[in-house]
Picture 1 (cartoon, helix red, strand yellow):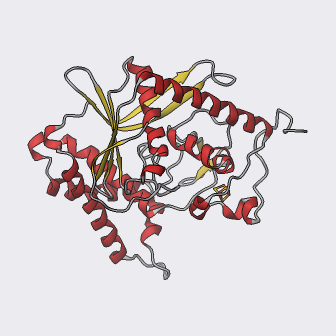
Picture 2: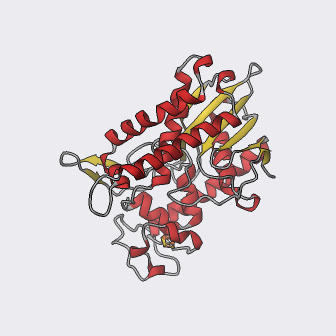
Picture 3: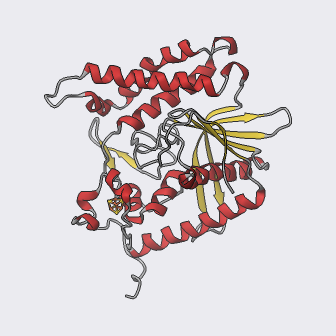
Length: 335
Ligand code: SF4
């Protein structure tokens, strides 16, 4: 099975990478936000302005975390169980701002959903994000500790260009989304020891007069080459499975809108494929539960390690992981 390309600007494609994949699980899935649905993270209140990360067993799967485990089980552990902090990413933060703009634009009457209006929303959405996450200011702080206004201006202009490109791919004056930034959650019974909760945020759901569902996901990066499309396809079929379970209807179309390259990729899933995704997720969850119980989280080095924030505590790079914070309740393999 493959994804159809509706439009292509003929620009080079690139695989998504951790931290800059610009995927959307709402604000939770970008810019390293913590404590939101979809991340499987637990954040408790500490001193004023301080977040206390509480180690906990994995409670649910989102597309991003499932992809983490498939990419590198140790990376999954660092993110979901140890909750090790990660540096804010300029690309992911830009993705959060662009997603917010594309969501907010639909608040306006159809005729007023213009490119200038959308671009005009960019600075305000950035200010809102910065107010919620002041640590993002470091993205625009020079080595001397001073605010780098030029870097911020360039970054905002890049965000505006991505927003503007969207108007060459879709016409928001002719769209009336049924849902925007939709939080979805469902439980797959009989998976693992106590069922599997699937959750995530869907950028946009369109419903045709016939009742057909279209799931739309915005990416601020470039469309990947065909050989690297399995990860975005997995993310979209994950959402399709969840929406099917919630609404009793297999989504008619899955649509990825790549603002970085001006591509729209579509895929029309069938029931058998979503059942196969469910089987895959069940197996994945069993593997995650086994690793949680044994404390065996193996590193799986790939070229994507270059984007990993955790090399200093990764055995593949001479580091030592922090002590495993959960009780080991099952013997290690061969032990
Ligand atoms: S550096 Fe590579 S192998 Fe190590 S945790 Fe990160 S992704 Fe996994």
